[in-house]
Image (cartoon, rainbow over the protein chains, first blue to last red):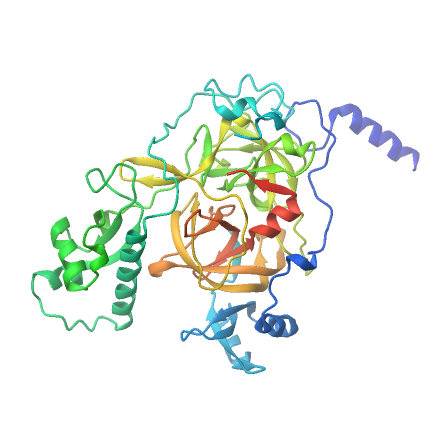
Length: 116
Length: 387
């Protein structure tokens, strides 16, 4: 490690704990950010045949301009369907009406999805 | 509580709260000596709701909602005769559960709320619903008549000690979100900590935070300041990956001072506020499930799971867009929004006996709400719910 980094880190340690804290405790060194982890196969419950079709096609659908989301839903009659959410109404024309025999329903989401 | 011996307290919580609670002896406090103090500004309603709503109330609500929805579809083509009952019928604009007024039923118990365009008596409204619309299940459920124009949107944006689920909370730099519920770590030392569960973007400021940061109740947007309103410190978060990698959850935990939080969820009653308990064993949501949540902005709402295995993009403002997969989508019942800004962090539960938790709400748009499956949240955070 270059000398200036050693000096810098020493200064930071002496200055008292993690950056940005506005607490005044003993300075528990544990980090809050959990390491990246994959979804274990046993937790993936989306194994319906329609889910498999979605998983195979979602990348392609989401790559169409104006498409914001894809999911497994139902038609008004209660049949399984693929739902495609579009923030751009014109994108509806680019979305297929069915994929592998499963009907596709387009729903509008003006402005897209936002963290609430 | 069976796990009484297992929990640590944060050190130095002498400033935490004068009010003794059962939990205050059972957990370790966060390592800080300046927990939020002050007197309780919130008097719990003793009439806590211990489970789901009565079946008859749900039936009446469901039937009336369906009729109103069907009416809306016919775009005002009202052909009913104007007798006493049906005059009331055209006056009915909406239906909900949960907000009673004194005298409408047992104190603190939910009622069937009927929203009307112009004032009408309770008996006229009931006649309209039972006779005019043929909803027999509404004949003897407690009913509350509300004039729509008078129904103000209010919010769970106030300070409460101990703080329940469903109320405003946030990292000191975040506007405000919702405190979902309490949890415990699954292994030492975290299994002796009482944790508050919410989103990364609520408790951890969308990755821009470190262990120990203040979590305040209410959130900053609702007037909360640190350290006066601190209830917890940031404990863990699952980083949100921006730029295209797959995210499964938006979640985080804060380590709470035990005396400052409570296990129940908040809802509004005619007389004030009430509390209810949700289940602690996470379940997966299924298409068509009727679900509920209590949240800072839209309070107690009911909706339906309209999609599972949702994949798509969520906008996090200046932080950017993040791609999520395997999420589920909820749509509010009766044409209302299930959630709005500030409801992030709410626990979504199945509207059935035991109120089993199924998801953690974190986003929405176009009248839809996006949530992560609760079994994924508890897995990635390595926690058990403590409800």
